[in-house]
Image (cartoon, rainbow, N blue to C red):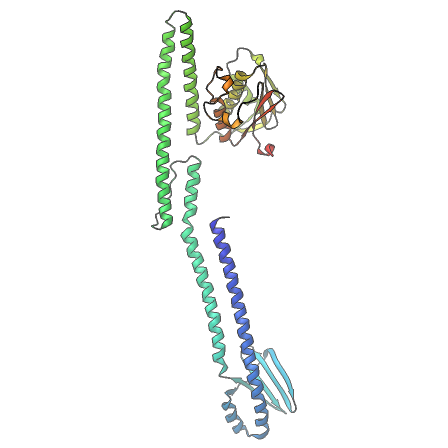
Amino acid sequence: MSIFTKITLLFSISFLLMVGIGYQIDTINTQKYESIILQKYKTDARKIFTWMATSSPDQLDNQLKTINLLKTPPSSPKQMILRQPHTFGILEVYESLNEEYILHVRYFDEDLYLRDTTLEETQKEGWILNTLVLADMVVLAVIFIIILRMLSPLNSIATSMRRFARGEYESRSTINSHDEIGEVAHTYNEMAQTIENLIISRQELLRDVGHELRTPIARGLFALEEIDDSKGRDILKHSFKELDQLTRELLEIEKLQATDIIKDESFSSETLILEALSKLCLSDESSIHVTIKENFILKGDLQYLSLAVKNLLDNALKYTDQLPITLEVTSNRISVFNHGDPLEKEFGYFLTPFTRQESSRTTQGFGLGLNIVSKIVSKHGFSLIYDYKNGYHCFSIITDSDELS
């Protein structure tokens, strides 16, 4: 749950509580106000019945003033609050359409409609409380908006970080505030610049070393051709070829690391297999048994994926103790099988550079093949899995995540 969701949830709870409190206060004030009015009007009504029976109209007006009642024109009732019969008339208290509480006294055929002028102060106190609650709700909403505006730069910083993590190393935050969030943005920009400089330096160093190494390797191989055949010449030639292969693999890894965008093209699994086989230098084509059970369509970079399949085949050929090895294609899965002893360590160990079986140190290679496969598969969003059954190693590239479940 994001911090913005949490703040919104807390604000919603607080706002609903304030609405509930305001509603309860208004209800209590209304009930209190009505109770005071009813009590006063009941007391006043008893006096009014007596005055209407014994006093003249002028005397009645003066007597009404003593209890703060003022005659008012009759109006349509909005809500009847009290209705009591009297021996010679009726007593009613109702709320009018303009929200005034009216006392209606009927004595025989004479009607009086009255309202109390002193109760307006009591009503104002209720409105003051309601106004304070409403003001509190407004302040709460303003604080909520201010907090969201203060925290909104975090989205921008997080977006810049995600872009940096995807390989867009030039991504920077543009927040220039002078508060703690601005300090976070500034610190991130400094960190990103430092990491970018380190990555660029490493990439340049590996490229330069790789390219510079290939020149003396080529010269050494050329010079070897001038030497007469001998055992030492063969050893040197083999060493130079291994060094050339190591340089090529190191450059391939650096190229993978530096590549942010791979091609997104559609091709069949059969095309991928043919491309991978063409990259292998096979002295005997019968050493690989190919079975395509389902020629499915996949999306990605054909050159990179064919290199991954080629490395799996090359790895299987190096470490098998029984030919042929098997390349099998099924729905959304490309698998390579080879016979051999179980791995001495967990599969993940062999995905790191320069790692090989201790018992296979004499085998040609530098432990970079599976590392390159892992990087290519990861960049495509595919999966590389390993299994060992009945003496056979099985390395599989799965192009559909649903198959893993």
